[in-house]
Length: 369
Ligand SMILES: Cc1ncc(COP(=O)(O)O)c(C=O)c1O
Image (cartoon, rainbow, N blue to C red; front, top):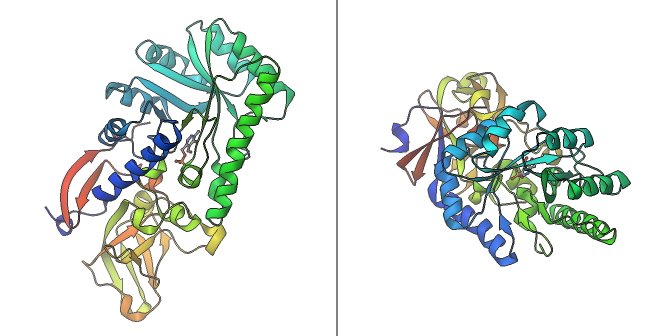
């Protein structure tokens, strides 16, 4: 089958670009002697996770208990659930922990006590805030050392170490800014490990990693594992902030023109918010420029600067044409570089795996929550 025969909207993954991305991140991990534990919430796909494992990934990271259960069924037996203090799921956690090595995140004393009370030998990481200011303990606060002490001394929890996620790298404007956040991410964690050591405590392992920071970081000395996820596909945001180039983006949304208005200089496509998501993209760099970029020529990695995905409803998108001739007729197809590949992938049930114009495979997306 060819791409032009697909019903739309369809989610296309470029097999060769995907493979390059997988190999490049694994090479970074191998070169720096860290373990790659990829975050699979990006793809939610056993076929891709198996590829990551075959290349050398050890363990995976997930964002929901349903993902953990699905990947456990697919044969993954070492899973970090990277959401802090997931106490409302304790019975599912205990059930899954009997079958696999399930690792949890904590940043709260009472949550630690609750997990300890289960007396189940649960693995836990202490989540640290390295500058994103979302979840995580303050690495400079004395209470952080108290929590490390408590975890190290626990009879019923296995303390894996300290873990952080530099999500603020997404606010960077260029590669240089990402590099400085990558250095900060590592430095904050090494400093905390050192402070703990000076007090006779041990943070056994250090886990870091976002796609931007891991894509540009040179030095990972002292780090045990990295957990990037988005790198498998990258996307328009990653290309804008400097984590990658447009040619590294493996995921696109194929959409058809379903209404066309040459006199009003716009047309309508069948990829709305339920295909592209309403992620605004890197508007801190260029201002708001629509909800994705339309390729003028996919093979040449050329974006059409005159087409703007201006407005989204559930299943429709309005594309504004900045030159009258760019108004596409009903039945024409466009290929879109989405702002956020994780959110786009989570809207579909399958990947259409493509090589050039050929659809070579279909992979299931397990998007249950
Ligand atoms: C805790 C944690 N680890 C790792 C990742 C993966 O980072 P990225 O999406 O930049 O690949 C995320 C993403 O949100 C995360 O929240």
